[in-house]
Length: 302
Picture 1 (cartoon, rainbow, N blue to C red):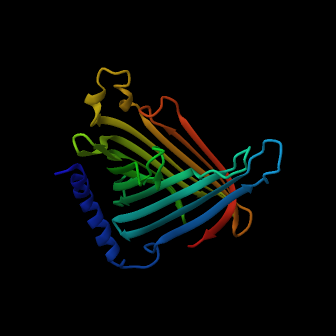
Picture 2: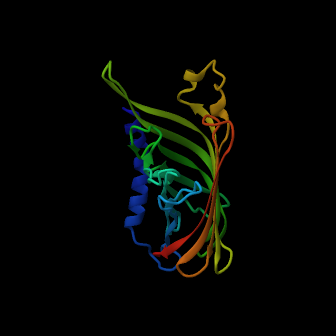
Picture 3: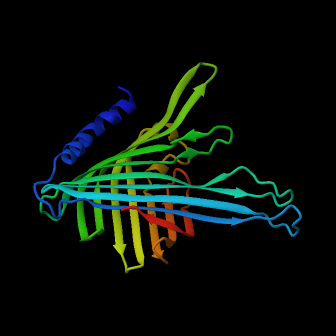
């Protein structure tokens, strides 16, 4: 059985559980109805100069669109299901300072993040859970002469214990700790001499901690945060890096900390401050920080 077949086989029980629960209507109304939210925002900035302009300035045009959606329901007295989807994509167009010609667009933001959590609410301090997360991007522009879509692709399956520290309306603070398996694909490698096509992939497993925070601070200000920590206990390519300087890098704790602060100026205009801190020693021995500040139009669909 291939790695992909094994992965899909492992996901089948979770998908069947979710589909079965969703297909059954709750016995009572009230707390078992869906808590839903869907927000779409678009942010743009633009400057331009004519070819007769002097001074070295160059025009630019930037646009970013984000979709943040979540749905949660107490499907049964013993099962709570929450699904959160985050999509982001943006491009930057820049003008040549000398010729004033516009260059081809460059990607500025790209994210696909779909997180699903099933908590078995057994009226204890810690609830057992099963989770599935998909992370990718729409366009991989790493190779300048080749566009790769939905690459890299990372899938994470985890089980463990979860606790909800706070809950009110759509606000919540939830933490979970458990064991996780991760699979990551980078595309295909083609050997034109041997005529071999090989999937570039790697797998690891270990301990994962995830904390989700969603808070309404006041009528105009809200905060959303997610902190993910992962400590690998095994790595499929560990033999390949033995004897090298980075042979133990895979053992370091991976960190992904996301924060979004949203302030509503009006019903359709908002100011968003997004920060993300990433640390993966296999990619870089230094932490990576991303910050985005924008004013844009917001459409609350739900």
